[in-house]
Length: 125
Image 1 (tube, one colour):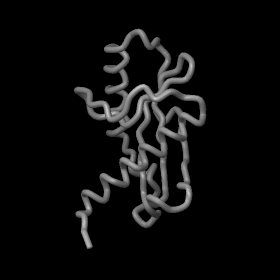
Image 2 (cartoon, one colour):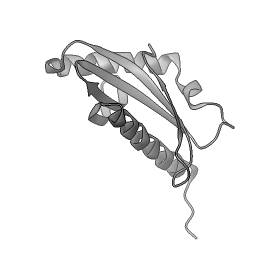
Image 3 (cartoon, rainbow, N blue to C red):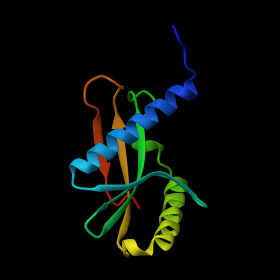
Image 4 (spheres, rainbow, N blue to C red):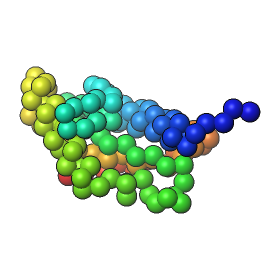
C-alpha cells in the first residue's frame, strides 16, 4: 500500500478543492480566467469573471471541521496579499475593466465521497 506524506495529502485536497470551487463558480455563470497565478505579492487560487466583474478567489478546503472551519484559515495578512495581488493583476490586464472583488470559497468534504459543502463569501475584503 502506497503512503503519502501529510504535505502531499494537503496538496491533493487543496487541488481538489480548487477544482470544486471552479466548477461551482462556472455553475453560477462565471468563466474561469486563470488558476494558481503567482504575482510579486503572492498567489491567487482562482480568477473568474462574470459580465464586467473580475473575482479573485481564495479557496480553503478541509476534510472535516476538527482543525476549524476552512474560512477561519484566511488571515488579515492573506487578504492583504490578495488585495495587492489583485491590484497588480488588474494593472497587468487592464483590458478586463475596473470592477473587481475578492471572495473566499470554503469547502468541507472528502475526495471521491458525497458532494462537498461549499460556502461562498463574497466581498471578503
